[in-house]
Image 1 (cartoon, rainbow, N blue to C red):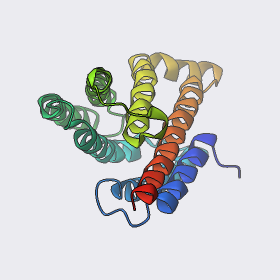
Image 2: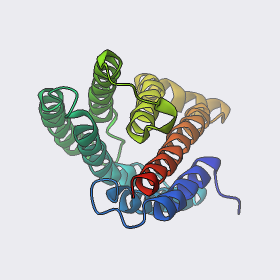
Image 3: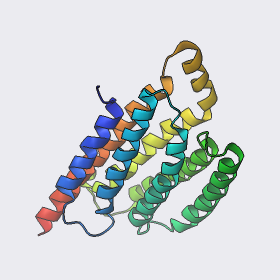
Image 4: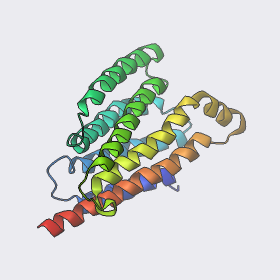
Length: 214
């Protein structure tokens, strides 16, 4: 049984994290365990899908872990540029409220689209704010070797595309039911390659900087 390409991208990113972030004890080191968790969830989700079972409940459990981790990373990367907590706190509060509401309403059997969309909007706003303040800095930075830039760029493009998919979630699901064309799956496969490809590259940049500074 061939693995889906999106899962392959996640496995490669996990391997890059363990190879190039080895010994990292700060927030960079947390990428290793987040990627392990992501790969495990995605593997179980794929197995459930192949068995013809609905995996929305599984991804509902994954969603809060994913969002809290990514907001934490954004906090650590952006706090030196602007007061990022002014965005993080309200969006996380709204995310949690919507997540609980959707979960109770749908018994956690349907994917929490609205809470995901709200959290994604917060990530997009924070990413745009980062780019704005990053470009305003007088200090010269080589973006090709700047690991935080690639982390945030990956999140920006992933959630830009993902938000569009979530807005048309029911429509894309209807296409799959009627025509058996997994449009949403195809789009997220491409987005996964962009996200985890950029993350893998950022891990290499982080490793090179660590080696050069030592």
